[in-house]
Amino acid sequence: MIILASASPVRARLLEKFGIKFTQKPLNFDEDSIQATDPKEFVFQATIGKFKNALENFGLQEPVLAADTVVSVSGVLQRKAQNKLEAESFLQSQSNHAIEIFTCMMYQSSKLEFIDISSTKYQFSAFNPKNLNDYLDSQEWIGKAGCVMVEGFHKSYIKSQIGLESTAMGLSVEKILPFLEII
Image 1 (spheres, rainbow, N blue to C red):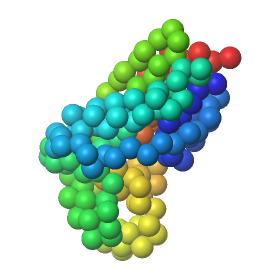
Image 2 (tube, helix red, strand yellow):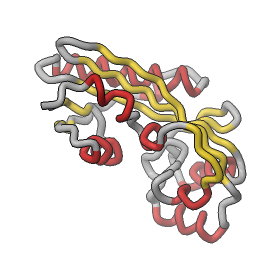
Image 3 (cartoon, rainbow, N blue to C red):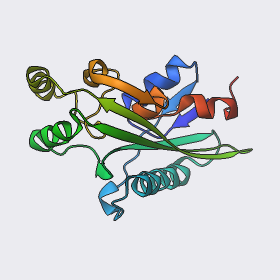
């Protein structure tokens, strides 16, 4: 059993899909305190902040896993959109363009420390304006880095992919799986 220090329902579903037993214990961490604008640096700083917070609150009686995800479009950081206008701007910048999704994970048990930063690159075709508006109206984009849902809205627009879908969804499960103490 591990502690997933995240409120993300997508991360929880990924762990369930891979048969990993966990308890979800989200914590608050102020990502706005991070000054980094480089996507890779930002995702690392956010994850280490969440991870330290989790260790302070939960200790290591059970292994702890924390993660963060951001999107990069031409090197420009996209976090979670704060409103519908920002979401539309993010999505317009992704339409018919390439993006890179970075996920950082930090895991620690009494025997092991694991840190990973992975990325998955996508090339998208142009988004259909009606589908885009429907997605914006659905509010499914809320709480998603760059408003990206490769398992949802974005799926039909993927022209190419390099990397793991799980990385794009917020947890590179295939990379950490061999290191987990699964019983």
